[in-house]
Length: 301
Image (cartoon, rainbow, N blue to C red; front, side):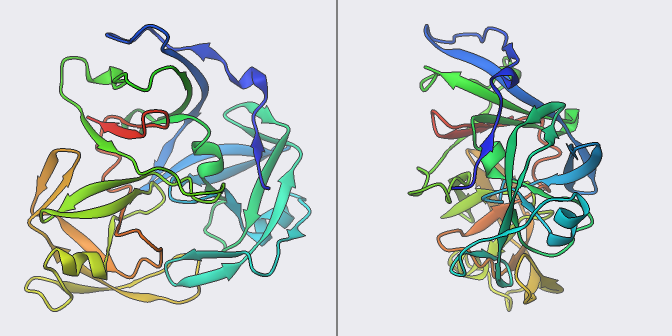
């Protein structure tokens, strides 16, 4: 099994006391990553030895990835994965290999063994930082203030940990239970599109939110609907490009926060049981988004 091992020293600090936190609820910050936005792509800095490596922070990636060219550049040995192991995304699927980096650091913390799937083409970055890092605890996306924080939370399943909200209301999206095995750790919840329930994955690596053609049709929108404009193609890990359209919707409701008249890209997604990718176009203007693993909820302000 692929893994990422954080040293015990990475558990660096207790968090401040939370208002109305029940007895026994303990929170400690494991890792804080400075984030810079490159357009709509959140970027974090890591190191392979002394060499800097910039990764796209991608909550939609089931595992951290690196291209074969970048693995070679950093002097890492690429090992094969079984032929049946395929990476699936927009535009089809792709074969994969893996590396185990022996001298890797993230957020200034040395990580003794960090595995990466070797897949995809060169993105102009070292690769994607995925759910084997972001899924190890609670994660707080504070992109306007340039930070992502990983927290270890114990005994807080019934607590509202949206501490940043103060007296302001925050909304909550209940999360679906993770799938069996280590390969389905995505952040998935149910939201409303034109009043229709759809399964949405929160995907910081998607520069724009994307609605599947099937989900858009359930919400009453197709490529032939009034106001829909052909915009070109979408592409992911697969080699195939798929047509894309920009479509007007009446409302999108994320945890009780309704946005009127959004215009969203509709296209094939290529992922089973996922109707929509909630991308980085929804995240940078949101002061905080917190994914709570224990209580299985997403809070945002």
